[in-house]
Length: 285
Length: 265
Image (cartoon, rainbow over all chains, first blue to last red; front, side):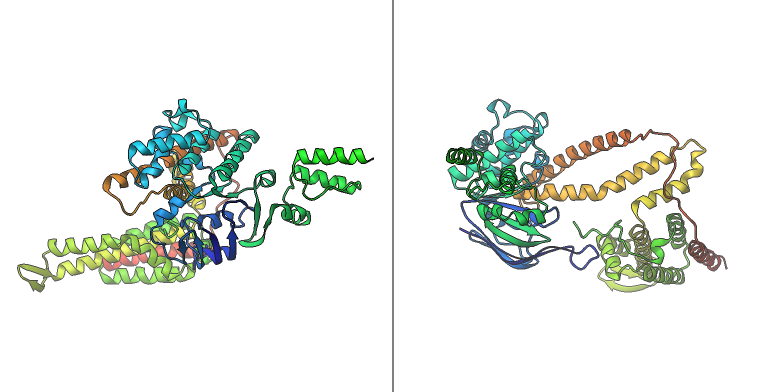
C-alpha cells in the first residue's frame, strides 16, 4: 500500500494556444493511514494533482503508483474500475453530481456500478448515509429537497459506499457554514481513526489543517515546494506570510505573545494546551 | 472534449481578427452564396484561393482547420456512397457485377464534398477569429433594420450571446460531472445498453439541474444590475468600419460578381 508520485508533469491541451503546464516534476510520497492536507494558491495545481490518483487524469510525463496500480504517462491503467473503487474521489461542490430520485438510490449507484446486487447496494448505501450523518427519515427524499450542506453529505456518502481505502477530498468544506464544515472535518477524522482510511484533503482553511491533518503538502505553480509534518509546517510562519496564507488563530496569538516577550513551546497547537501553558506560566510568576 | 474546434474562438492578433464582426458576417454570407453558384471547378478554385489567403492572414494553423473537418468526415463518406448509387448520368466509368459507376456520380460527389469543406472553412474562420460577444454585437447591428418592424432584435442578440457565453461553461460542467461519475465507477464506453442509459442519465440530470440554477442566478444578477427587457440600452464598445473592412467586402463582392459573370457568359 503506497501512494508515490515520480517526476509527474501534467500539461493541459498540449500543442495548442491553450497549452498549460499544471504540474511540473512532482515527486511525492503520501503517508498511508494519515490525513494529509494539500494546500496552495488558486491555480497551483491541487485539483490536477488529486485527479491523477484515480486515473481521471494521466501524467503527461512520469508515473505514479497507487496501491498496486501504476499510472503511466498517457496510458490508461488496466482495471481502472478497481482503482476507482479503492481511491474515492470527492469533487469540489460534489452536491452537483446527485441525479437519482432518492438519496438512497443515489448513494447505491456507486456500489451497483461495481457489481453489487441492488438489495445489498441499498444496505451499504444506508450505512454510508448514516456514517455521513444523514437522518434515516430522509433516505427516500429527493436530493433537491435538501440543503446544500446535506447534499454535500449525501455526495460524500456516495463515495463512502464504495468502501475506498484512500479518500481524496477536493475542498470538501467550501461554501459550508463553520459548524457544518467542522462536522465534516470530524467525519473525515473519524473515518481515518476508526477505519484506517488514508485521507487527502485539498483545502484553504488553515484551522482545519491545524486541527485535523497530520501532514502538509504545499504546491506553488504546479511544483511541490514543501512536504512536512504539521508541526514543522506551522513553525515556519515566515513561509505562511510569504505565501499569504492566513495562519490559524492560535499561531497568530502565539506570535503576538512572542512579540511581547512571552514564548510558548512549538508543540502547543490546541486551545486547551495553550490555556494550560498560560496557567503554568502565571503560576511561576 | 477539449478537442472540439468547431465554433471555438482562438485568440490571436491578426488582420482577420481585427476586422469588424459585421464585415466578417456579411463576407461569410456572400461567400456561402457564392459557393452555390454552379460554375464548376473554376468557382471553387477562386473561392479556395481566397480562403487560403484569408487563412494565412488569420494566422490560424492548418491543423486547426483540419481538426474542424473531422466531425464531418463521416457525413462526407456517407454522401459519397449514396451518390454513387443514386446518380446515373454521364459515362459509365466502372462496372462491378450489376453496379455501374457513372462519371456524373463521381463529379457530383466531388462538388458536394468541396462545397461542404469550403463551407466548414468559412464558418470556422468566422467563429475562430471573432469573439462570441463581438459576433452577437455584429449580428444585432445587422438585424437592427428589423427593429422597425417590432422584431426584438436586441433581445434576440442577448439570447444568442448568453447561449454562446454558456457553451464553454456547460462543457466544463459536463466534464466535471463526467469525472465525478467516473469516480463512482460509471463507464461511458463499455457496459450493456441499460448501463449506458443509466450512465447518460447520471450526466444529463445534474447538468440540467445546474443549468437551471445558473439561469436563475444569471437572471437575478442581470436584474440586480438594472437590466430591463426591452429597455433602451447604450453600448460601451462601438464597432468601427475601417479601410481593411472595405477591402475585404470589396474582394468578397468581387468574387461573387465574377462567379455570376462566369455563369451568365
